[in-house]
Image (cartoon, rainbow, N blue to C red; front, side, top):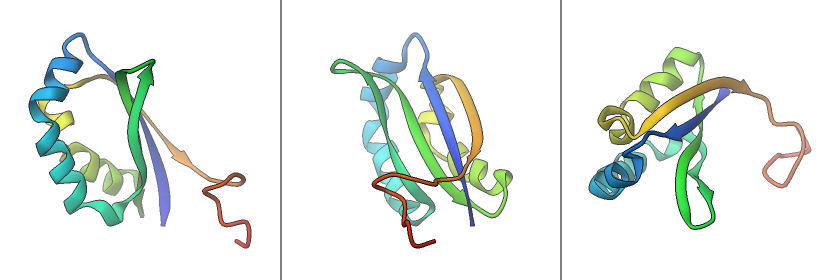
Length: 98
């Protein structure tokens, strides 16, 4: 299973949209929780400015399908989205035995 990092920056109305559909977003994440390695907001001080989601998938298309089901995506919270395969090598979240 590969990991795909989605680095998302909010658009001009991201904050308003986040507030409006946060419950739907969290409910969706909960239904897909086994497909996420990690997910959370990117912040500038206390202000959310984007999201980082690392999604598991055999292919980028498989991970992208999970990502594109997120209400934040469908509502247009994110203005800019970059995706790259992620290979964790070191750090607190990495199993150093593998």
